[in-house]
Image (tube, rainbow, N blue to C red; front, side, top):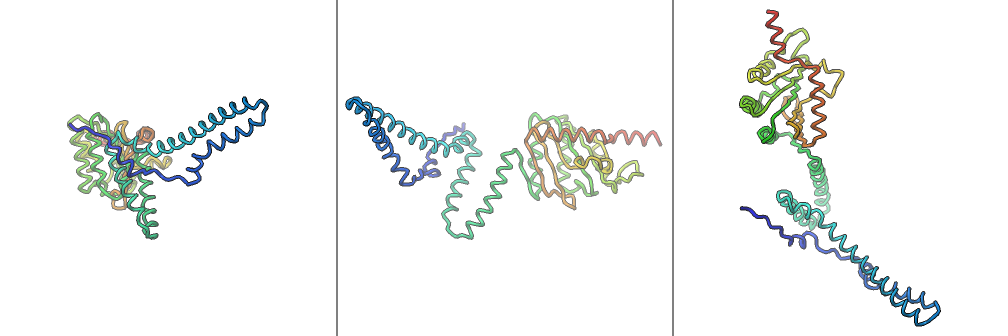
Amino acid sequence: MFVRRTDWSYVAHMFPERPQPRIAQSGEIIAPPLIGLTVVLILLAAPDAFFRLALAAAAGTAVGLLVWIAFRLRRIALALSELRVPMALAATPEFFHHYDRLGSALVAAADRADPLFRNLAAGRLERIASEVETLADGTVVFHSTETWRDAYEALLRSPGLTNYFSVAWVRSPDYWRDEPARRSLELNYELHDAGRLNVERIVVIADDLWPADERLPDDDVLAWIDEQHRHAIWVRLVRASALSGEPDLPADFGIYGARAVGVQELDERARTSRFLLAFDLAQVEAAEDRWRRLCVYATPYRKLLDQLDSDA
């Protein structure tokens, strides 16, 4: 059994006590007696010498003590503010480990005096900080890589996920035809056929792949759609021109229950250029609203097939 122990020895290394300016340190020592002496001199101007002396001594001591306490509280507040981040992360070992590594690496990098290195490092650190801020918003971004499909599979297989609503914006006959895409589609079939996941898909099709005078899309696109239909995935179709009044609707995105929403951006070869996975309820709800609006325009593929049968 793994028992995590929090070792606070890292504090001395990562947060050494920063020396205060000499005047501030001196002020902490001389301020109380100076203030007390000032009070004494003021009160000595009053009548009754013995009373004045006793009252001045008590008041000076009290004021000096209060000033000393204020200095100490300020030092304590500063120390606690520096410990806020490590204390918050201590209960999350997988995050604290990276915090410790980053802190040590930053200290080592700061020891390098070359000005060009410092400028280059500052630029790189700015990009890293921006990416971490994106993570703080609950969004993971994958750039120009198919590694997002590992996260995609982990999400679809995660316990408790029962619905996956997908919108496919097909602008090329090569859409989702490469090997990584093929494996993702096979995963859809596996989980849907086993009854573990309800998969529904709306396919937005470019007009050159589904001309207005054709009852069904081009054969290449149709084969991809029909294969999903034969696995009992509920597929709806809509021409891109039908959505001209709502330009935000044509997109590639998926809704993973109430847990997350993924947005896929493709290049001209229908390959992933960027994939954003947001674990944010507000973004999930916005995607659900887009899904409902798309359903108004889209026609079930089953209905199109029935219309063909009735006309035959």
